[in-house]
Length: 154
Image 1: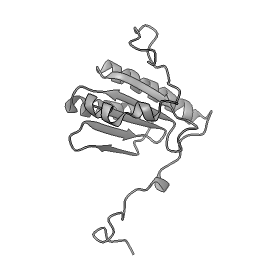
Image 2: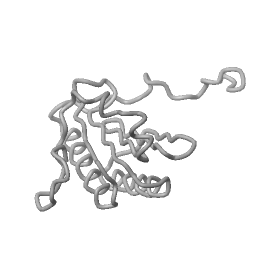
Image 3: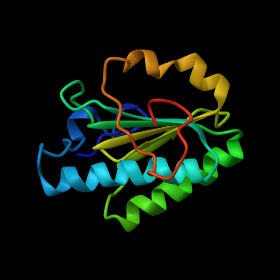
Image 4: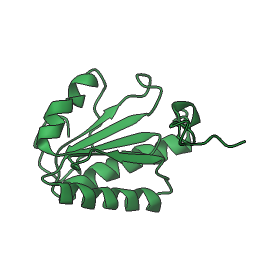
């Protein structure tokens, strides 16, 4: 018998135990994911997002291998770049597991299992301060060789 969602609000909801596991180290999938996260960071930079960082959380998180975060200037830009990142993922053979956003679209999260992408407006990014949470994680260099560096992390 199927649970009635009116009586059980969690009926049909995905739980962490339903979520696929990130790729094993050294696999073709892991190389694909690393290429995707670097390409996604470059795409976000090309689309005028700011302060783009990639954290390597392999061994620090059971949920994902990489966390990519960036700052957009408006809810419209955030929605637009989210669409572009989804298109890139699809082109590279990655499926989106889920996505969430806050009511005002100041924070949008895209979950590709091995990579979680956070798109923030500046105030939301400062409020959630995920850099502090993942500050111990190594950062992945993603800038193209010909690009000037704005910060040491990129």
